[in-house]
Length: 135
Image (cartoon, rainbow, N blue to C red; front, top):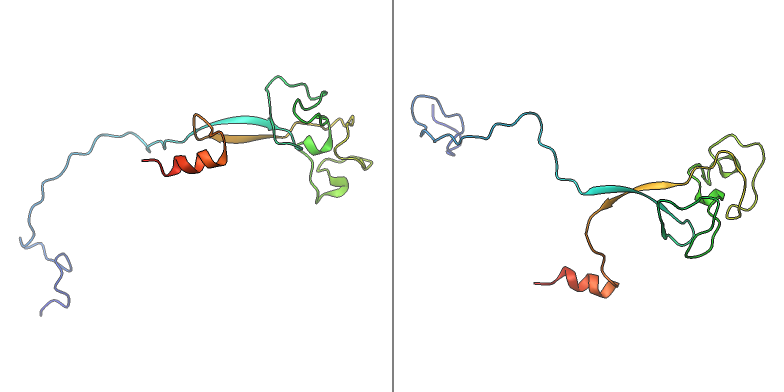
């Protein structure tokens, strides 16, 4: 009975028709290979102007760039517009002005994890675009 397909390797028998290929020596590895991921950092950004606030910034003060209050609902981790009183914590009364300073006991600064993808940032959008197509 002949083979249906004539490609090599399809239903080959081990009767010696195959060629012996030299085996490449694989390096010894122990466990899974770790991926090369870029570094990461935890940053706190102003909710009004998106300026990165320095690590030692006091949450009782104001943003150094736009002078927005830092101890406000908009800067908080628990701020959620879809929740009751726009907060995921069990507060008893609604705080009407979300960008104004308040004395909420549940306040925690909203920090995000960002990847460090490049060592230098371009000066403007045009320079970034030109850097894409540099030879």
